[in-house]
Length: 194
Image 1 (cartoon, rainbow, N blue to C red):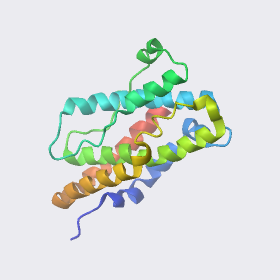
Image 2: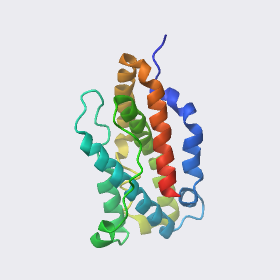
Image 3: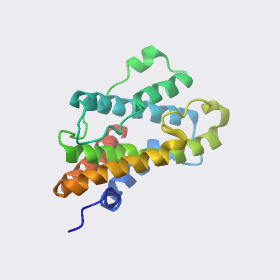
Image 4: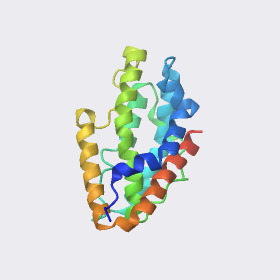
């Protein structure tokens, strides 16, 4: 039997992925009538989610089995973007943090979470270009989150996928758990953004 690959996840979690794209806050930023307010609100919501997720991930410690594909910090990038858009440190500190997060206790669960978190950086590049095109200089210096790995985004994603595929080749029986965790990641994010 051939070991499952990370690329097999795309079709299996497509409905959950589409749900995120169809949420009003995401759709308004991705649409032709994007406003600076809508962009700021979406970044604020993402900050609450990733603050919870990164804190939970940090509590796990370094796992020799699963690579640290979470760096760089999405929270730091989101805070920088929101400060650039006028948010104060006090406002950022007062924002709610998501507590309903995907399980990431096992290597299979971590792989599923990493698939969603790192795969989203590709869409972030597309969304950043869209926002910059429509909002111009009003978002100058405020797309760090969307451009998290910059020019290296595709290479970072390819490296992360290769590392995760290597784990799946050694532990193919974890694939159902990977799928479940990826779906749960999309689901908890969608719930938070709703």
